[in-house]
Length: 212
Picture 1 (tube, rainbow, N blue to C red):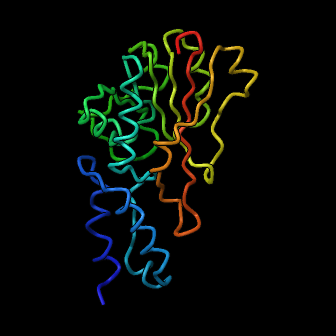
Picture 2 (picture 1 turned 90 degrees about the vertical axis):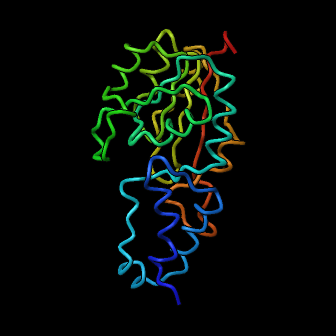
């Protein structure tokens, strides 16, 4: 019988490397194999997602790119981590600028991720569209910035509750929330578990009502 490490290695490589991307079914297969393994097998396999929480996949990025094509530039990702999401969006023709404050401990590639706080990124690029994944407590800063028309937040409901403003605050700021269900359907995170613990990823679009 193949070792768990051997079964997982091809897809884990796609998860860890910035320039590679698994399919949705491959990402789910990782969770299935881990769920069916014994504690000893998991321990001896030294499974490590290398700081990766979201398992970005082909179908998720394709669907997100389709949504972003309808939104105005400049498009900036804040808290981009290793820059993988922005990298693959750019491969699909979406001109995303990846930024991160480098506080998360993930190995950074300065050629694809610019070192900036979210405030610094807003001030430098004056974005119309902002993308953030797993970055809590920045929503008000983003929504109150005068150039921002669209803010997409990606987060997992089983990890933390991001700083999503109340409906009253959104109304005061002139924003409306829409769940991007077609994108969300392909969300997979390392915190999910197979088969009944999937679907924790939320993809929320906050759009300025007077422009959309």
